[in-house]
Amino acid sequence: MTQTYQTTPKSDGFFMPAEFAPHAGTWMLWPQRTDNWRLGAKPAQRTFTEVAATIARFEPVTMGVNHSQYAHARQMLPPEVRVVELSNNDSWMRDCGPTFVVDEKGEVRGIDWIFNAWGGLYNGLYFPWDLDDAVAQKVLEIEKIGRYKAPLVLEGGSIHVDGEGTCITTAECLLNPGRNPNLSQAVIENYLKEYLNVEKILWIPRGVYNDETSGHVDNMACFLYPGTIALTWTDDKNDPQYERSNEAYDYLMSETDARGRKFTIHRIHQPNPIYIQPEEAQGVDKIEGTLPRQPGDRLAASYINFYFCNGGVVVPIFNDPHDVEALQTLQRLLPERQVVGVPAREILLGGGNIHCITQQQPQGRTK
Ligand code: KQY
Image 1 (cartoon, rainbow, N blue to C red):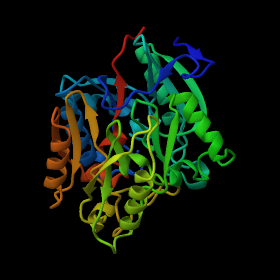
Image 2: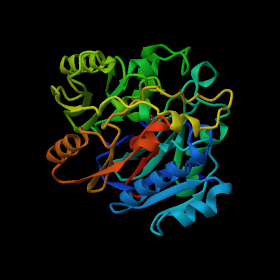
Image 3: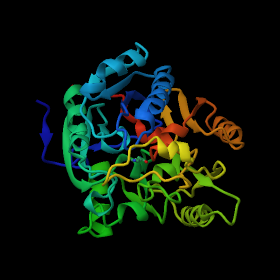
């Protein structure tokens, strides 16, 4: 049995490395729930397969799959993707998987946050979520990696770190009453400092407009390097995202990181507004208690929801005129990596994107 530590990562000298640091591999979960994914989740399964196959060009990928889909997923996924049976309610490994931490000697451990489906009974997206809540512990058990059980409701998509002491998050998400209604901002900050081992938390006010996670930072802004941030953007003053992105830009420009650096911010123009089409909404099973998919609903599309892997960057694209500019800008800013676009509308229809369905396991010397 993997060990559960009663201490915190900070007290043991562990910290969360940046996503752009070297990985041992990537974890994902297989989509299947028909009240979130249209047409029996078949189109989403094809897109998840393409994401997994793309990442597998750069590093090992493990796909966790419910028992009922194991044979099908194994047959769809390329042989280089490891498939393990791993019960889950839905497929968002970023959010229910462990947050890995490392120490200076290269040991890797994992944080198991409390998961409540983005808001529990207050404004969560489905019920129950017990299988998702158990995913982090099972991943750590499979990898024989020690575990910290954190007393905080948190999803991996709500935090980004630079690996040098700075964490960015959004107030809209982490202070949302669906997560930790009895904890003050100061107490939440302290937990982030203890578990991620960071010195400075930057609270961007809001995330992407209509993001059903209540504004995860991973759709809004991310570190490209320490001191350098990419931010989703629009030039359209009439778009509700305009005010949100400007507010984030002004806030970050007025701040410094944990090492006292001013930020360089690269604005990545979002795709044109994307709405759920009637035939897309029709393909989703309507179940009481699950977020309904209505025709005409605006989707929270952003190129920032990309994923770093070893030597690569996997970016969602939307068959949109802004795709090329986003890919070219990221390639210019990250010249040492190969930037690859993957058509990702099917993931967006489920409420997230490529970053939300992936979780990096950092390189290290595991036990
Ligand atoms: O943004 C994410 N990190 C996950 C989105 C989950 C949406 C569930 N329907």
